[in-house]
Image (cartoon, rainbow, N blue to C red; front, side, top):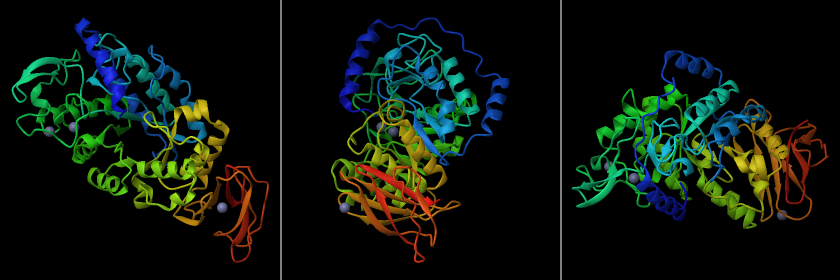
Length: 461
Ligand code: ZN
Ligand code: ZN
Ligand code: ZN
């Protein structure tokens, strides 16, 4: 979810657009629903890398180029990403939103319009047509990548005005999308006959009520639901739930119980207790905002002792999705490569942000860290040393040798004696930053070094 000010700009612009929009003729649905396609999807999906075995790519950023080219842009990259050790790509919300061809998708209107109906001012979404989306997903599956859908179900946008007996006013809650699916009225939003609200609304957007049977059926329960359409017809493999603060965690649990697949929620909160609570209630993973903010304090606040603090991955690594930047927030600036060195050597399922990988940072260095993550970073974690500008931790290995990572946030080379898991073993720095090849003592101690504003990762040669 994006900071409110941007949403309001979009909403205002959309409100203007809305006046001039009318429902155009129904476009022919492409042949998405025939059995041949379904069979193809199923067979292509059996050989996918397990989600979490590698690294996730967030395959977009805020305001990617408009004009319907984005699906094709990333289709050209998925094989290289897979070769580098990526195991899944997270796409932006794929369905038609109120702002039509300009929308980043977080103001959803018709969940069943993936760029094939002429409504909200365009046929294609900002990212392309439904056919181009399908082609991207098929290409990703061929490259053994899973595809994670961004699911925005806290709120909707773009409905017609109707008299609402629960508010005594007119509300934009009358939805009759061209797909003909998931028609909605004021009964499906808050307040309604069930209650006045859920755990949160977003801006002024109509706030969906997930207690309403019509909403449950269309979102995940019925055979025609959004979840089943996305999974079984379009071929999405997993879910990233937007703004889960705005509704109860059982919604995500019910969705995933119904259709399965990896699920991660955007619970934007630095409080690790809250994140831990949400994952236990939803049984889904959560983005580790606690880790994100501690890394910001550590690397940009110049105190690596902050990395001793609590984070979701330390509570429950199997439910923590770690990240350094995303489409909403990108505050770790000076120490960004160090932050990537941290998440790619530690527990949790790390995510790489598209712009960091493709535009802003050194792709070779990130590929090296992805390799280290996938090949050396197994097992439990012990922090060996911290001070304001140094951090040393050991991964104890699990079906691999494990590693020792040394992060140095000072302006000069540093070196330190540390206790490894290896005796009388020649080790080396797999990042290539240090040329040392020291031999560990029989008691497993060894002296390692790390470059200024840099890092090293040690494991047996
Ligand atoms: Zn409700
Ligand atoms: Zn809500
Ligand atoms: Zn120091």
